[in-house]
Image (tube, rainbow over all chains, first blue to last red; front, side, top):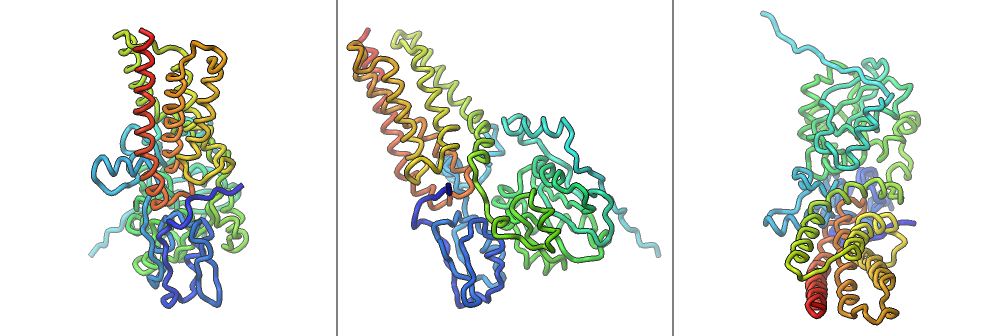
Length: 99
Length: 334
């Protein structure tokens, strides 16, 4: 059975006029968000996106935007408590709760 | 004039994991020495590679390195281990330490262009959030080929001429994959749990208790529900938000605890206490289940933030009310 997370929250956007159809995004996406249609990449299921940012980093034409971040509650709590951007840094402390 | 050149340094490794490698992985899963489970960054050789052999890139977390090399039996390849401070590929990529800059540095340090005559690197696909393939090739001349998500598919990927099937490109998330991540979650709760036990013990000393065995196993059960049971059963529990899933299973546990202790059958069993459990236990489970978002493979930052904005205030209120009910109940009995 496949896991599904919250609907309509992912911040991913694809500017199809900047897409050249190189297919890098399809290659790097771990959740099958993109598909090639008419020699251009399209987002087929936005709700599968986990905002890892692999597509953004690897798009040579800056056609993709996403608010990259860690989907980790512990990181967000630590961010709230310390007033910093949530980051996957809990591994530096002894608690070691994530990744 | 003499031009000094640095010596090429490569390290031989094997595809066989030793007993101590396996024990090391097991310990890391339980959070023992997990942050110092590293290998030295550099260029490693597997088998007998030459200047046309493939170069596979990985992180210097020992579990990452081991899970890659054990799949390379019979191949002659190079492994380029980059310095991710002992963090696995995917997490390090998210942090940026498995990144373009470190990769470029490491290529220069090991003088890769002198070791191989080709210009291609095979990277794990999950390194992609930290790497700009086009920038790597712009600054080093090396072309980045993203291999499969899992090391076990590397051989098939190479043998098929660097073609990954759709399956190889997708992160799978089986119940077993989640199960192996639960010990660390559990270990992470020990400190908090000890503090709670300490407070309950003090309350007992002050005579506000008595908190006893039932409270102990009720709480431990709620922790196990949140840290182990909910993560393992994740896709089968109705709903989408992790906190909700944890709450639901935790609620079932709370009802069970109450019934086991004679709720509705034993008249002395206080309604206040029963309600207290119903408010506290599911919230404890929900909190720990929510924290599993960090270990899951498919939660987004926006999604986690959305569920937390509702869950965190709700859990705090619920636990607060539950604690008041339990304390009031203790006072009545005094």
